[in-house]
Image (cartoon, rainbow, N blue to C red; front, side, top):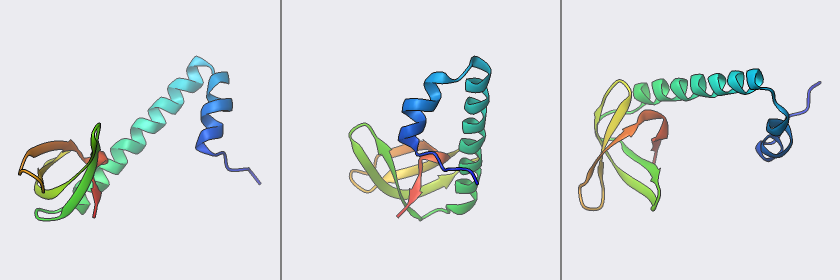
Length: 93
């Protein structure tokens, strides 16, 4: 039975010891997972849904205006600013 590795343990003990080939394999696995999350979000969200996403200054909450293939257009609840956000960065409220 394999032991689950925490993210912190992965960052501090496993990654520093990886070869170039192993790092590339992990990079591609992460990219595939991000694409999978984006596709799932595109299928999940509809116009009018309340969502949030993170920016440098904190969370932005708003309403979905349009769902594109890779991005979701969100109108901010404060000020009505429009954001084009990658679908893997958006979470439902």
